[in-house]
Image 1: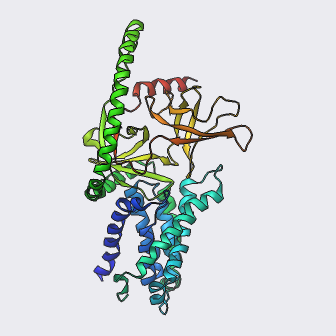
Image 2: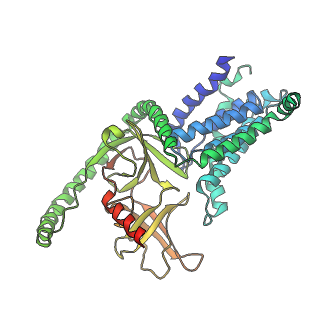
Length: 162
Length: 277
């Protein structure tokens, strides 16, 4: 039971480490995939919606603390992303939602929600062109994240029993 | 009552958790400037940066050869520039001595390496492996050989976080080197623009932009970028000025922290001046 609680956090810190050191090297025009979000979506689907919401808040809080972004902004966006991912956590479809391309689609939806909320709180002002903001900071990173999440579908460790 | 609450919790716990956590996030958002929060943040990123610096070192080794070549080239160019500047320096000193001006050059530089970068395009930050132990303070400018990179925002014992030019929270007072027009430089999330400069002001594409003397955070002129586009703004009053930064933030690995924050004496003078108004 304890191990079940600790694993998502150990995974998170390992993923965050890769995210802030290695992932910037594969940035395309400043757009980077969000590995933390992929991890969050995986745990939200494999556990349940409540767990996903709480885990999203925790992940977001730690990201804000460690990366120096506006404290609370990632926490808010990841909470809602975790909650959304949790919708796909029905007992009968867990396996399908994680093992097929549906996973990438869920990641795309959650990343889009996450990016929109984060951009709104961190970059929005009256002079901002909302369509440009949504395209550059929400749609493109979400697409990149969804594409990277395809690799996860083929990875061996997600095949464990939930 | 307890059974009712228990039933509500069982049926709606996801929604209750969502609402409570959103409220908590909003409360935390409003506490960003709180000194205690800043302290907790310093401890958190300081601890994590210790680990990231190890990984960052491994990756930076692969880039050393390329960086060495670039540095050799920069060195040669700088050598030529220095010999020219040395002559100017001698004349400058003589003129300053004649006018009894104080010497304001010679700021100490603290070398630092970037150990990690943030996830966000709008809130771009870098973590540097220099902290309080190296006399780094919040507010110090971060530069490299090309120009301005950012401003130190949080400091822990061994590490510091700097907001880069690609951070919406960093607004910098800059000046057009040719026409001496001041403006505010900001990152919109996609581009660097100078705001609040009327259409009628003399700014042209190709003008060099440097940090302004009137800046409340950067004490000396540091090259920032070049005006890439200048056109009348959509509002009709203010112009649209897009700036291309000299320092490309993506490949930067080694930087310098200018060990100088704006003088407290100046701040106090300005504060007293405004208080008297």
